[in-house]
Image (cartoon, rainbow, N blue to C red; front, top):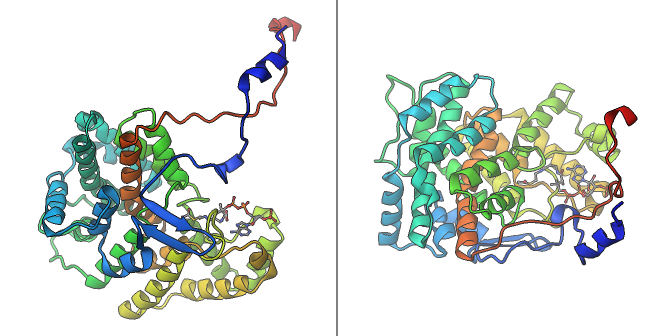
Length: 401
Ligand code: ACO
């Protein structure tokens, strides 16, 4: 037999940190967040200022290149993206074969990975220019893929890109343009989209970003790395929470609107029920993005003249939970996704599309982190483990087991 103690000796000292709660995986210059103070900065700029003053294209530049662009830099960047404002026709055939019932995140992840087949040069990234080039390509094409998942879900034909518009307007048009009807941009909706995308643009080493970096650390191409990140974002404990929040609010509404009952259910951990959109791994004070989104929800509902019972229930739920000892003790506050789904719904985006909207917002973060990892020459990600399985034993023939 094999001596297990010898195996143990070979492993040396291992830090066991389940869920990487205290393990830094990289050195980064992109996003800083202070969970105790509830502060978030993109490249040193406070999120509050960025959300109020910037637009999504400018934030993409900031995350990717490190500074806010001047006029020339910005137009070069925008034109670089516009050069790729189309997707190969063959890719549309892939969309056709998915059933309409398919979850848009599954469709998006598959299409993003398939993009490599039609743009094989995106994998050759030996210089910074190559990395930026792959980034521009993906930024342009990804907005099409996101719009396609919406058109698929709604059973509508695909719209083409329009280079006379900026990035968010172009996306808006690809999503909402109705054939044979004059198209008009609604500035309230475009502004709301801009803000939501900005607030989701990066959040340091979260689950999907770590996935993108981990996959990319094997020198896998950008599109396949991001496709893996989409899979991570899909989960209800991560980006999928925005869909789960609306489903929870609808359930509470159908059940008579008694929010206290659901707060109790979460406290008692009945059927492992959690208040979706509450709690965060790092923010233990409040999520600064949630504050901005809550205000944006109020503004948008007023501007569009909409009333939504889900918004009332969300407000009540927040109030009851924030006064409850269980939530206070555990420092559980609404996170970025508590109100984002309510806004998306008001903008006419179906529930299953919410996480796709999150993915579109997070794209510049994923790409910037992937680019940084390649430029820093980070080693391949390969965690260790603490083994607790069977001790060494000899193989037994089946008739002897
Ligand atoms: N509702 C009720 N109780 C909760 C919640 C919640 N939403 N979140 C955490 N808790 C409780 C846990 O049951 C645990 O209680 P215990 O001490 O009695 O065992 C305690 O708070 C700590 O929770 P952990 O799961 O250890 O916290 P962790 O940092 O691992 O998880 C997470 C963070 C995943 C965000 C968690 O708060 C959660 O599941 N929230 C709901 C899902 C959600 O909103 N996800 C979106 C996150 S933000 C984003 O990805 C954009």
